[in-house]
Image 1 (cartoon, helix red, strand yellow):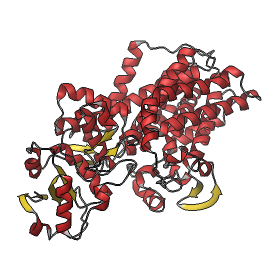
Image 2 (cartoon, rainbow, N blue to C red):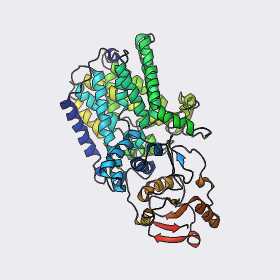
Image 3 (cartoon, rainbow, N blue to C red):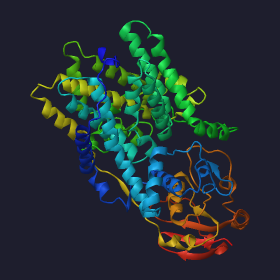
Image 4 (cartoon, rainbow, N blue to C red):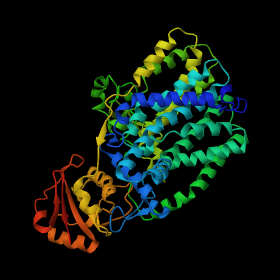
Length: 549
């Protein structure tokens, strides 16, 4: 396992020509694979209408916030009480990039939509490049390492799980900083402070991208200590044991401006969100073709039985990838990186499997470590265990890089690499056409601070209302956040007695009611009585706008 002795590994090279060449290659692959999305950057939101509409509001809110306090608490949602955003699913590096670019390009709806889509697509070449750097470093000075590291980058960045997350969750799709964290942490194992300081900063940055990744970083450090224990037959020396402590404390210190509002806003909140044994990585799905695969019809029967939803279930590892790993395992000794990678895949696959093992959708009684983790304070908030697959793909990339080096002189390797590429080509890429409806112009032109009630209600409708609020800029009564922090007008809103509802809305400063009938909204309820109680100010095929007062 000499590969894991990073003190003896070569210094990481950042020579521009090689990195520029590889970066251009990954950008070209991104353009080729996702050309349908590139063609409609300013007219359609990547993915089907779901949480991605909430993510678009996140970018708009960050770009138009008047000060940093608006990023921790807002009355733009859940008017009039407002809501804490401390637990909200901001992908902070991504929304920061959008906010900076919006200062130069503008913050109108079409521009924010374009920036949202571009920052999502950027996660593919960026994560491929950072994985390339990690794999190249761990391979050491061996023949064929550049090609092998490119394979690792491709598998980590363009796997079906990442494609699915890009279509649904910006924060989960922001994976480009994870390989850098691993690289810096491994370089700092001998106690070199500058690398550990960098690892702590990257651990914090990953947490700001998706707070799940803070926990996954902890789990990685625990796995690495275990791997060293197995390699050496004894626990690492004191300096190595101190590395995860230093890294965690440093990251926590950097995150205090974020953690303190989280702790303060959570005071008195007792809601426990479920999902630890629902949104899991089913081992059968490792081999089943996901919805974006050319052979997806073969995987449909299994996907119909899995718990959770299709995008969290998309954990396909690739048959060609697994075939190459199986071949490499049968070769002669001297492949420590491959063993390390397989150990990491196993470790995180167990975490991703949830509280109890699921087999082809059947929940077995076999308890897994997540059953304990889901009952620990703070750790219990990691309620979608399947997202730990991000580290399974990271270790899969490392294992394949080692296997490619081992097979570099085999005549069949180019053919297998083509199969690996074809196996991960995504098809049926969904996008949601969005624009600002003209029916909202009357609200957008209202200079007052009046709020808006969007109907019908419901989670999906709340996401759509959030997105469309970027068209008029007024606060809304609805609004979905990652965690409900307290009761608001929405919870006590009268829905049957419209006269009483009108009094509620008037007292709360809600000036408009919008009845949506567009494709983004799901019908829910009878709203025929609204025209008798409220004055209609505009009507179109997709919405009717009423004035309350």
